[in-house]
Length: 467
Image (cartoon, rainbow, N blue to C red):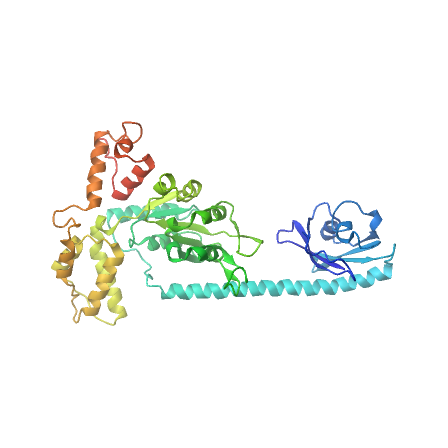
């Protein structure tokens, strides 16, 4: 007796159970065959039983292939049908020719019906268990999202630079294209990613995030694609990966540059083919997740110079790059952000703060904010804690001491970034804004053209309009 069931794609038949009294036990072999061209496939597709002698069989389907050498003379294959759907095939054999009579077949068909009910129930239980596990993990993830400190639903500011970013978001959000956010640390990339998600058709589905730099290299594959119970030491239960959780929604991978080279082909595959396997499983799963990635590193340099990032993956990610300017490039937004954070933290701490002096606001506007919006947020939170009246108190001495640092531009001393910006601008002007070629700006600067273009974008350098 044998039990034959199809794979998830209904393309292959798999032998799940085999029992020959005093048989040879051949379950260690590859026990799968194509549906097309096999006897079992014929029974599965037509839903009609097949009874006959082994000597009448030809080919290598689930017939003489499975029972060769066992002395079997007669074969009976019955479809396992439930609710007008064939779930599999039940295979029975005997050692005599023409051994199955019409009453035998009628009786065995009734048994096949009961087997079909049991299999249908087993499939249903398995599916319910998988959905339950996925729901539990989604709930855990959503609880973590609620506890997240970055829970602001709006992007604050009205600067020209920020409005340009938001226009890009409005353009790309309705599509399913991959978005690559280029920014410095702490500049609010997650809010931009959420804005893309919330303006898209996927807004009612999960927004799943993962910081690739925060996960140990050995566990990153499991976090992205999931694993089966027993896949590795410590895998005590099945785990649903982020791409599976994000199906029909959006997955946001921060610090995408930190993904190991040996894992990059699997990420490329899930982007191109929408397919992956959990660790410890050969079953191919599909996902319809949209990817938004972010990095503060120069990926083109990692591709061409460092060779730490695959070029095909880079091109697949770099479909629609969005550059988020650092806070020092959009100082007009600082008063809005100060007011927003002050109200937020005051409300959470049940304080009544509604005033900030012009001197304090001016000092905040002139501070270079190397830590960007995150640093400003932390400064305001500390100020709200220390303030005892309606006025927000901030230590201007601390800000001035930081602003007078030798690396700051406040005291008339340029930062390294400003020096680089001036140098690149000078070379571009000398080269008449020609990038490529032996006399182009890239060659004079000793860098490749994509690297120069990335640096220009990051430093806010654009070619002047011809009058």
